[in-house]
Length: 394
Ligand code: SF4
Image (cartoon, rainbow, N blue to C red; front, side, top):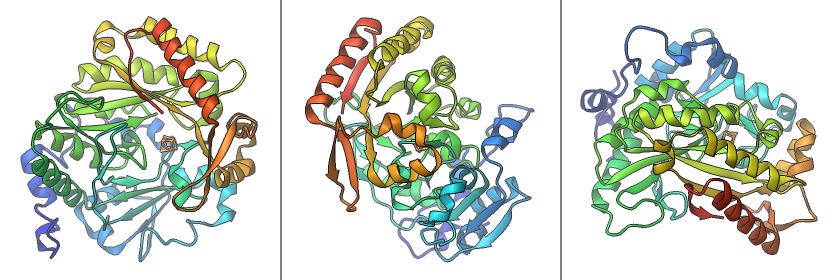
């Protein structure tokens, strides 16, 4: 097995073998005999992988070999860099097979840059993610912007280095000196900024390794947003050190915008199981899309949450409210494959453009529209789900 300590890089403090010995990482997460959800027909419908583009080092690594073994029928294509795959990235022709690419293609690479960035809204820190890209296809997703039209999942196989980096960051910080809206006690690290950790867990044990690593760090907590219910995560025993944030929106909006995700009702219904399994369970009310009737639709959603969630979930729940941000380039892409979504997302009468750091044009609701909508949503929560503390609204 590959031992990361052979690397000259200081970040390689331990190998996957060490990780497995200390945390149970890399081991089969099933609780007993019986198939994992990721081996089910439902999981294979989401990820029917036929082609895997892999950097040689990533393919040869332990994690890489585990992934290749999971998809034995897939064609392996060697690539120099997971960032530069001309037939996948920035290729406008791919827009016609936008969803197929996400289902049938994987990329394996090694994450070179390991940086933890301050955040202060959703989490205290954004950890270097163990993946980039997603097999789902939400029409408003910002993740593909840097990669162009096709955006399959890139799995980073050097999870040992990623966890070692986070562990050092946690150790250097020490205890959290004072409570903030992210968490009263723990430093919160977002581990899924550029993908969905629940879907990543259909491909590899990267998510499991991160959940298990955070168990050992009493001053820190992992956090990730998800739109997919993956029952395999229920067996990871997070011991309260991982916060899962189920993203929810009105069902009609979700059916149009959240392509390939778990239905919103299923995400809400899963909350109690995840709490019982040892997760902290929060909700992302996001994105909030202003359209005729949006207030009634959100009121109905909040009433349903109030009806079905048990008091144990309500007592510990909190929420982020995130108004829609859209993007001009993504608008053009969507027009080519899912134009109905743009009826909701592209509202020049309500939105204002703003040049982003990478030079593309983002659009957000105008300040006045946005402030009024946030206020409306706060009022709806106070009326229909008063137990739901809003951590922040943006
Ligand atoms: S689940 Fe998240 S990462 Fe995946 S497509 Fe939707 S918004 Fe993007």
